[in-house]
Length: 367
Length: 190
Image (tube, rainbow over the protein chains, first blue to last red):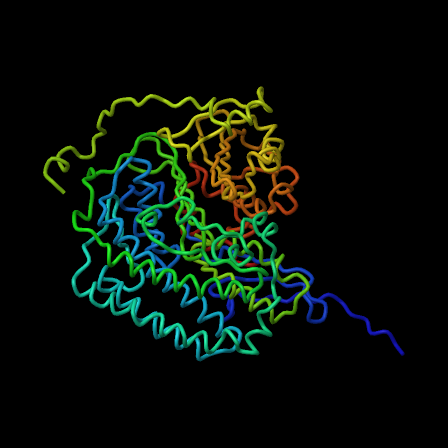
């Protein structure tokens, strides 16, 4: 019988591809359908935001932080404002802290809904996508009531928040936290025990805790591998130190575990929003800060737990009203780096599942 | 915003100088200083905050220090959060590299800093944390800092044929070409 000669095939996936969640290109080396090597190519959305920051005042830069992770903008507003507050030693009023927590947690729900919905869509479950967007619509309505904007909220201000929460917002937010857990049952019914979903996600793209930490994997992805590390608990900011919530972790570090972690995190976020709404104190929503922000000379690194993972700002100030250097540490950048390790030896179709499972946003990878 | 603040225009308030905490007593700093007495140039922390400890080290020793802080069980900095560069064009040692480390088990952060001249290579830490790969590529792409021993040092965010390093302070903010020159420029991909 003649020997069939096989040779390596290079497949270019993206940058225009419905399953890459933006303009991501992955170069795959294949033998048959097995992946020998995967190399993500990024930079298609590079806008040089860190360079822009050097020629903007601290306040002017605030709207740019929305454009990093555009599906969960409040998380980045919060990270930036708290970084400046740390640099200047500003104490934020209690009510503002609670409002920030509420908005940031709604943002997490909103982002995880996209993560699960689009991930399921990539694998072929369209119904989940439509159910997820049904609830995301409610979260966007909440944003609209609180901030006036649905996507790029630009809500936090240095020293507090833009506006107080209206009675109307509080009313619909209370309704939302009651109905959301019942709606979540729909996704679970469709996915958690679904045989196709299990086949596509169990034991696929496994990454161990040790390897994940070595690769700087963070957020729900590293928790899926069993590392109990959440910045909200480890180094609390805003009003998280007064909230009761659990950190869900997985065991195997496969796609299925990362899905379960996100699902449970939404439930916990809902719990936090509920508590914060009940405990919401009266008082000011903004500290008295100088109109021109001129932090003292120095450097800080401040991080929050954004929906995708550890979102950090490293700001070096030279005492002027513009940052000397501003570096944005983005969780998706670190998460994408582990894709080659995850998909090594898997099939082409698993790359789609793996990219969906780490929940990347190219806006914050390319900056 | 009250009137007083507007008029002040953000002038810095003179705050009473707080007493600086002595970092030599800090267990982390102590441990590292014990091992690398000669190679630590400076230690300080911003606003007396223990999550902002900075250790300034000699460039040549960075790989040894990184390996030590990761493998020493009392320090246990298993997580590399970030590597970035800062450009000071007026200095002889033009660039500062800043490493942000985190210990998941001990919940402690640490910042390492080093200075390097333009064109001089720094030892890569990719063999210690695999995650350093992309951060070092980014520092190379954006500031032109070279890394010795990096497996795949090429541009990451900018196109491969890009000229210059955009995050340097002397990088022109506008296109220097005249419209005529721009027309003559070769199209993308050629």
